[in-house]
Image 1 (cartoon, one colour):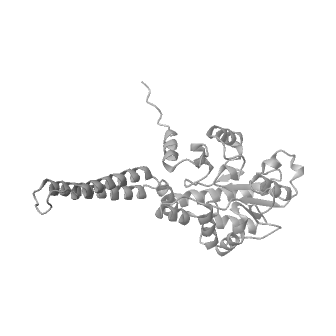
Image 2 (cartoon, rainbow, N blue to C red):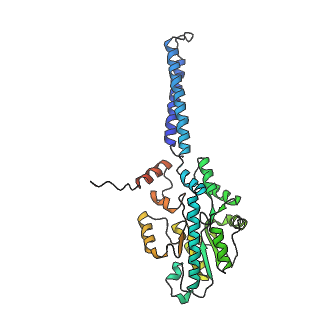
Image 3 (cartoon, rainbow, N blue to C red):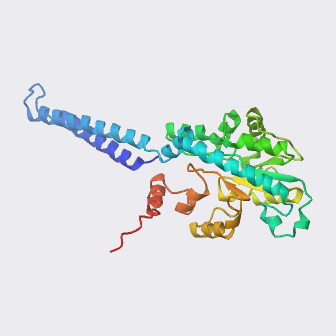
Length: 323
């Protein structure tokens, strides 16, 4: 079901009803030869109503198609210089923090290591851990296709997109990962892409010039190993082998879990680790999708698009006027 589908159905029923009335009027036993007969006049009037309703329907369908909820967010990522400015700025901050982390052997971005004394991880080789989608690879073209086709995300079309290997580089990401690689820092790509598209993901990264050096595994996909559906076990796997200098991502789940929880719980998690943001944790913008969006309607993806929008709208904070 697409946005405003209910109004579309309603208008189609109106048109159908008008057509039925026209047909019934045309089927009267009164003579049809007389242009001034009541039956002919009624049929002509109903035909005009039908034409008008068809025009209204066409207008409403176009508006529904043009008002796709992801339109502005996707265009912002594809056209706004401000988007480039934010992502490049985030990666320049990451470069500064990486150099600071290399100089401080007690520094870690991994919560698993932060709970240990530095002696447990300071001698491990350094690594930076990056999410892939909307952090390293820009998939806004996939979102644009969904908008043009009036469709919603599904795993089949997403995996097909991944296999196309057409994602672009997020501005600033390539330079940062190359810098890390040149400084002897292992670059780990930790993604929720399915393991079935890992080869395509690696190809896409390499074709764009990202370093993909396995030591032993640089691309950690969902389901690649038993129990690797969440990101936490994969981050723990990295923390066993490396001193994690930075975590870079666009979603709370790229830093800590569970991300798919209530808005209040998400805020508490973010506040609890406030000292990590902008130092050990570098966040990229993603207004197109993410766990933040699901939290607006309690992750009930069985809701109709209209009901999802209704619940999102209820979350707006207008700062009620004081008397």
